[in-house]
Amino acid sequence: MRKQKMLTGRVKVLGVGDTHVGSTLGLAPPKWYTTDGQNRIEHTHSPLQQIVYEHWKSAWGRQFKTGLPLVVFNTADDIDGHHHDTFQVWSKDPREQSDVAVSLFLPYRQKVARWYACKGTPAHAGQSGTWDEYIAQQLGADRPDDGGGFSSYMLKVEVSGVDFNVAHHGPRPGRRVWTLGDTARQYAKTIVMDELMSGNKPPDVILRGHVHTCIHETVRVAGHECHMIVVPAWQLRTEFINMVVTEHDIADIGMAVIDVEDGRVLDVSFDMMNLPESRRAVA
Image (cartoon, rainbow, N blue to C red; front, side, top):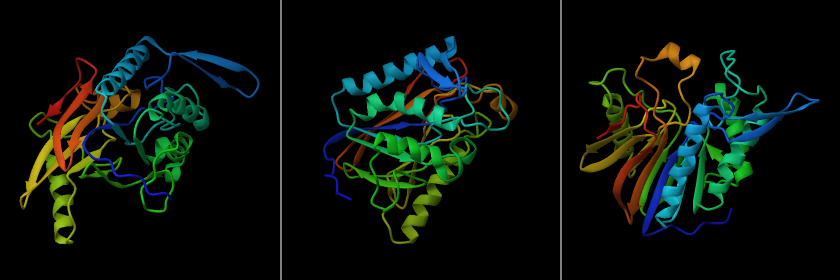
């Protein structure tokens, strides 16, 4: 594999994930098509999906407007798949869902400096992250130097001298306002301490997804500062989510934005859609 030129100077890093394309409450374009094997079926997004899609376009537009090089970490669960016998999917065919996901990602992938992809949850992306890998391959995602495929369960990537540790699964957000962030801090401390005890340089940024809630916590261990960031999602609350969370959980729609420059984390923010149920946890 050809070695890529290292990015230096100021770079904007985006954490984008949990789009759950295929869900009737996930990210969707204005129009797309499926087939039942005989008939071509036209779909259009719902009024709720239109609101999410408009924020999707405007959020990307704001990042490109800065003129800075963009590096994307796609934190997986690109499609919803067919899980828990849900009715809330517009196709049970993961390839149809995946091809629509590719069409949503491709215009932005073509403009960014780097696009890295994680593998997500088997219930959504298939065993061994089959469909996250398929989407990453179709997009020509950048490969880490591990000899693997186009996506990975764990990404360790340096961007302008800042070390990123990126995966899909991570800490739970906490079910109460006063516990939000506690688990994330302990999770980050464990990773930093494990690396220090192994004689390795710990990450400067830990990036995770999966829980559809944005979190930013900063921890310091033995003089090392690490940013623990949980990336928001692009799926509104589904029937399944309503069964497992409290009434004010799981409504964070948007992307994480991390500005880095020559070994420093300059800023961490979230480009969020304004929802009454959104619970921004920015520390």
